[in-house]
Length: 490
Image (cartoon, rainbow, N blue to C red; front, side):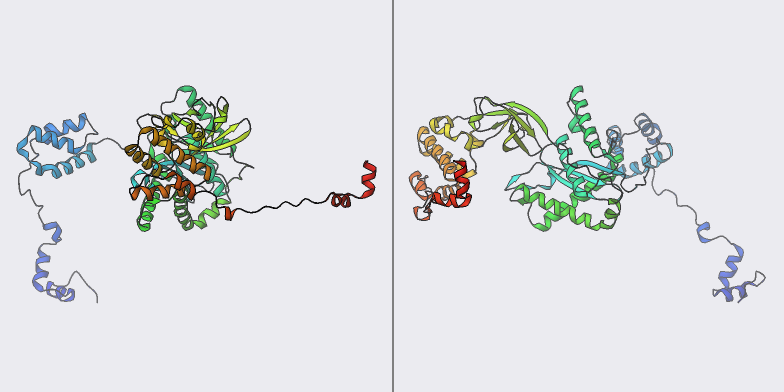
């Protein structure tokens, strides 16, 4: 069917399938309905008409960053009659004014990432998830590494702050797990590591970080202080990882773990599942990575300490006990994020868990009762007012037992029994089992019976092996080396 402008209105209406009256109306006025509609005017007076240009605009010009809610509160203070109902109107009016007269904003320039080019590191606080270890809240962060191109991730539980030690350990774990190193490594300004350091300490920290990157052939770089989006390839990933951990904790049903190793395994499993989704891109980027060096570099800080007559040393506001035979010695301590390795010369002596000072700056103690129990048995009353008495008890049952003993017995006898209990746990190697016995006695309202406990944990003679040593006759050795050689040697 062909339409022609020469058709009469009735013919055109029939061809278009609408009424003749509609055709005559369109013939008389060819504007669209939307063009005929008059704009709707205001239905009520503008509440901001007399104050916007005279009061609000001057405030916006004088303080461009001021929040609309601040202006709203100021307006209500000046003009209480306006009422709280103008808030949304005010916010819309300010937003429209700023779109026309506001300041220029910073533009985010999206980047194209090349395979094997950039890896990024950052730390994120995990305190909001409420993770506990054996019922004790775990104050920790996650060190987070990510490749910008493929999205490979690695996370490491950090017990302290954003220190160089935590960065070095986490970064090297990530690189050796990945099997290669990118050409550039970017971090933020490590503000927690640089904060409150003097100029020499800052230079030393910068030099150590540059040496770490040079060991793996990476070019170190940092984003500008306070400009988080320059590290956006990992900053945005923080939120995704934390939400994944939070969801996994909800599905698990509890945020409590038996020990730190179990929690670290939990984090590793989550990160592994996230990497599995990007397996193809990760495998393609691995071919573009640099080869790793033959060995790792140091991820610790080395400190020389002196063991005092108190049977330990103080390091970073924490007192650590060591075997008393080391009193007077100078020890070399390798300081890691979660433990200390103690050396005499080049000989490794022992490993200690790392302690942290209290948030208020008060010193803390890391005490092993095995280091001092022999001296404490000679002076049991020293336990009563011992500075690190609470840290001396290896388990809560021992602390609870001492409190009950002090309530029911004289201090001298209570200290003697408690020291003997600690000595029993050390000598018989029954710390956990003895704690269970103490808990049972206390729950039943009984004091610990030292004689009964010694009998209970004494070696069973029936289980002692009967060792019979049979000496070989000397003639056997003569057969082995030969008679001729024996005569020649004689």
